[in-house]
Length: 137
Image 1: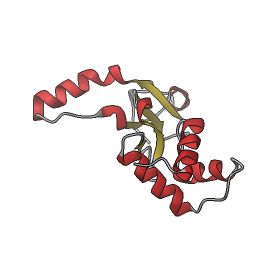
Image 2 (image 1 turned 90 degrees about the vertical axis):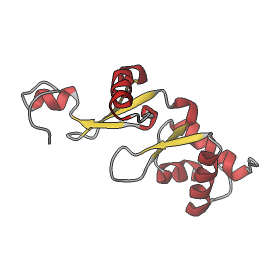
Image 3 (image 1 turned 60 degrees about the vertical axis):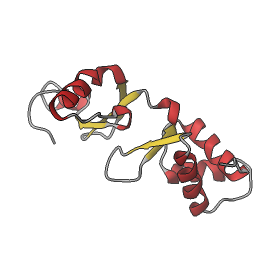
Image 4 (image 1 turned 90 degrees about the horizontal axis):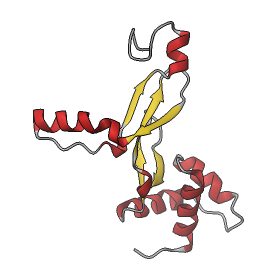
């Protein structure tokens, strides 16, 4: 793949933003001082960069995916259904889960793209329950 100026600008925006939706990336590119890019150019650039493994994405909810540099896939996303806060936890914490899935099904899970939905400690405390107990919203 050729790194066109448009793709370089999109890649630069992903790098600066760390995690961002395509719309957030398009807005960052629009502010970088270069020629305007159409939204379709941003989307095509993200697709091309993902195809060669430079960027990757995670679906944090039912909305647009969140893009990040591929080498930043060393964590699991924790998405609070109460306040919407997104935290990260070390990928190693998912190791036992991956092993149990493999043992039970033969499936080799790739958890670097995983988003776990639940409640953050603040929302759990406000609801009067520890984060891993009680009904989920």
